[in-house]
Image (cartoon, rainbow, N blue to C red; front, side, top):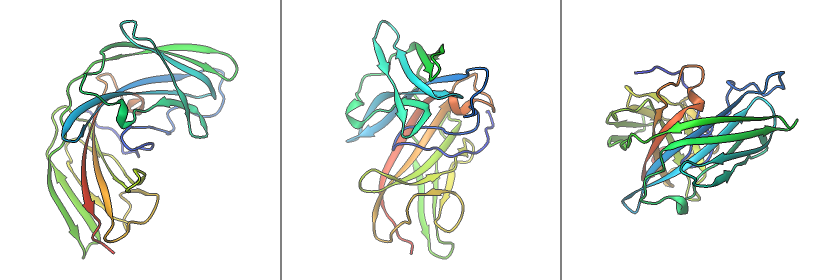
Length: 243
């Protein structure tokens, strides 16, 4: 099993966005880009549904990014990630998920920087039908002031990420990733196990999200954050029980 360093998953509720140092955001003589297609899977109303996310990363400001789908499936125009023009993406909303499997094959990215230079890169994508985690333990420990989580190891997984979402779907906690052979986590506002955007409130209901990630077979320690193959997301409603 590959060993990858810890990092934080940023971005929306279900999808993985990375703003890390592998693509230096300073202009360089050489225009470097990454294109990543991520197959997504989760349950909506107890039904397994699928979608696709697209990411383009560069070491220069991006002016445009387009993905040509396999089998003459058309094109997808990517948009900037917030105020950053070094990451362009399209992430699926709930309405984009369906029971159909994502299309396997070669996805072609065409990325143009602010100077007009264009590079094409491809991502050959397939599905390994990554399973969901099964939560074995959920325990609020008032003495240690943490929420302890434990789940089963998922075959083929490379890492897990724990998140908490508020009632509006905003991510309030982004956990550091844990390796595939460490299927447990401590969520605490008092210890550094991740990043909080707001303090948890005792008695308030949150969505617990445990994201299971599989990297591309050729991913390395240097580029794995840009080479996600597949993601499955387990969700459960919880009431926060710590002060």
